[in-house]
Length: 241
Ligand SMILES: Nc1ncnc2c1ncn2[C@@H]1O[C@H](COP(=O)(O)OP(=O)(O)OP(=O)(O)O)[C@@H](O)[C@H]1O
Image (spheres, helix red, strand yellow):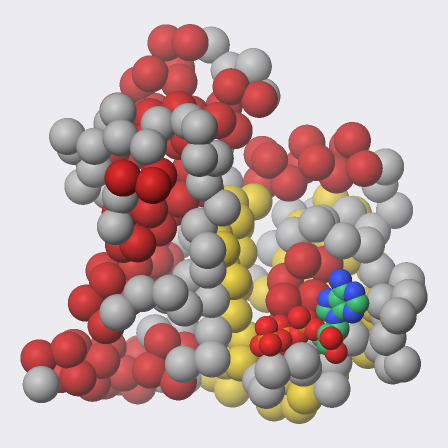
């Protein structure tokens, strides 16, 4: 589903590459967490996978489509149709209400109006946002804003979700809600998820954890279902104490 071969990226102002010679293969339906110290290249790696940035060297493909050598316009199109992005600070459009924010990628893709209405209604119901359709982002709690952002990420029915610290601004209860949604998408819909996180208990929800250091993958750990379940239970226990 996601393949990287010898991918490197150095920012013009950086002394050394932010991501160096990274090779990675993520199977369809895998849930991968990316951890590592601050500045180790986690966000850069996610942005490269998602086509928000381009590597200086190496190849990146998503679902068999090469991203690294595409023109910006084509990359944007693939990104919109194949990948849903979730950010720590939600990145909702402040002047659009909940319904319009969720509909945004479909409107940009010129989907038929009736299709947009049906899909948005479904997502509002799935993500428990009923009653908030006409609210603006500033009128919502952090957890609600992140649920709108997840709904927006799912609008185009992508097969890949890239999440950069999706629980970073949320308390335990709201973090748990977001993790439950991601776990459900992974289990029931077999979406491929790559999630950057600082939090070990959040990473415990993934079935595979990549540890990054100085732009390189230092460890690639596969967890068992049992570990996964235990991590979620531990997280829940923390919530109840
Ligand atoms: N736009 C940019 N311009 C220049 N340097 C950058 C830019 N973005 C990131 N960097 C540098 O690249 C390196 C990797 O940054 P990146 O944000 O990918 O790390 P990270 O692991 O996600 O960090 P954090 O956990 O603090 O978010 C860092 O040294 C950072 O200073």
